[in-house]
Amino acid sequence: MLLLAFDTATPAITVAVHDGTTVVGEAHGEGAMAHGELLAPAIRDALAQAGARMADLTDIAVGVGPGPFTGLRVGVVTALTLGSTLGITTHGVCTLDILAAEVQVEAEFLVATDARRKEVYWARYGADHTRLDGPHVAFPADLAHQHPDLPAYGRGAELYEGVLRAAGGVRDPRAAALASAVVAGHVIELPLEPLYLRRPDATPQVISPRA
Image (cartoon, rainbow, N blue to C red):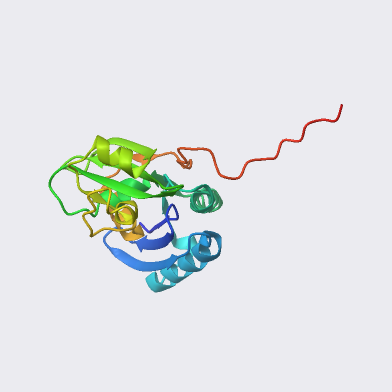
């Protein structure tokens, strides 16, 4: 097995290669509007570190969000294209689940990422890291009112630390965690369809016909 995993649902572009036993290659980048420019080089670098080629891959895993429209689309479309071109198995995973997999706590908790517009994407997890609610999009104050006693992890929690109970630690999803969770079978797999949770910022302009 040789699995290529990546996530572009947050400003962090993260890529990893897993050989079925361990992570053998990683690459990272960051840029809220640079996913298209950074993902391909990161994939190339991770494969080079693993001493592998595209033709060696057997599986593709990708975080399907939730996330902003443009960055999320880059990752999902890339996974769909590679899966189809190479004729290999694809795995879609909720990006919030990737973050949750690395949280070191044995109690209920929240994961929150930045949704822009002063909102967060969030989900609630049990002590066994099973997702109990979400993903949703909400204003931080509304989330804090709904779950005032739960610690929150992720960039969204960090960004609104004065509102949410930011617990520190895990900030962004890591492709290494995604790859390891998929190989271990510890994820709920989803179709390779972007989880936007709301309409994209850019919408086609409607031009009224002339009378």
